[in-house]
Amino acid sequence: MKNNVTMRDVAELSGVSIATVSRYLNGKNKHLSLKTAEKVKDAIKKLKYTPDEAARNLVTKK
Image (cartoon, rainbow, N blue to C red; front, side):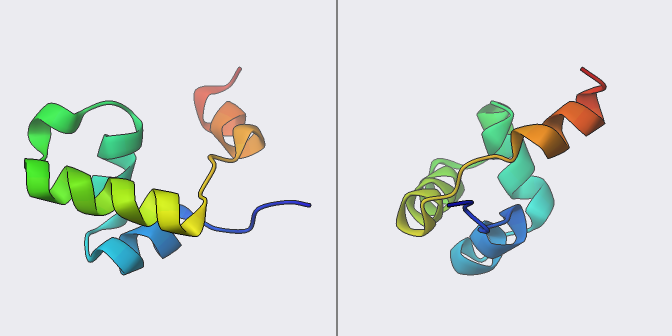
């Protein structure tokens, strides 16, 4: 079964922007406060978010 949880869902639950979720997922945590990173991490865990590899491949052109 496909997980239909999106970055938007993670952003809404954690109270941050989609760009902030993206930064967290791409390892650019140095630009995030510890509190914000923790909120995003908790939302990802709660929602059981997994990145969509097909979408990622379209963006990275791999």
